[in-house]
Length: 378
Image (tube, rainbow, N blue to C red):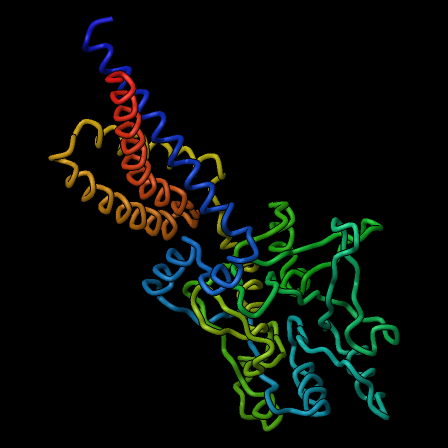
């Protein structure tokens, strides 16, 4: 083997070793440390994904439009009777559907008005909650409102895809299955099914367990329940629309989102519902493709570093930051034009850890050569 070939294979060995080392570091940080309970507070406080950047950039550049399908009626400060009066008032319009994102936990002395309203208003969806069974694979209806055994109503499950109020809500779960293989339908999906069966069928055809919420370029009219009762709300905001009823200022029903901090639960249902009605779904590149891109970039950067040597390594460091910037720009542009989320977070980690692995690798090589020379001299 001549010197040139030997040098090539030596460089190839270093490149492969450094890349494998960078992959191990990336996996450790991306999956290993995040799974340890000691890191949970840090993980929750820094809950962030690349898609947040894409959604924020798309939202800031998009022309905002007022939803033609959904109106949110805020019941902040209203008593139970006011809420029911408002629902009856709205039902007099030719509404598409009404979603009541409220739990009536305790009965009162006389519940006739509540039972008649919820049982007789057409196209009404009441909030419910599902819980996971002990086997962890199926779900069941968890009773929250006192009337759930008294009247026959249509339920929309109001669970948000979050374990606590510190989680960022980016997705929604359209359906879950019970142990009897029955389907529990989430509130946004139930309302879409009533209002626009075509959009509901399109969601079914996607056959996804989880869907990403599209937050950009849409706003929802928010009106007060008391203004509705006082006839101070424009009729166009109530007729032929889906009316979502809920609290907008209740701190225990607010969550984080990629765009707003915090955002009420009823607003998150509105965004999920609008995603279904518009068909503006966000697709995600497969994990294997994200890793392939990351590995290719790491190999290229490592090869450049091996070629550059010590004196020109500063240019490789500069290239590292340029590539990271370009990945973010490309990801944002592709998301805006194709509504496709490319997760470049793995690539960014690999690029960073590639240079760390390079320094550590050759540190060990230098240590090995030092020990080897000591042994030879002896």
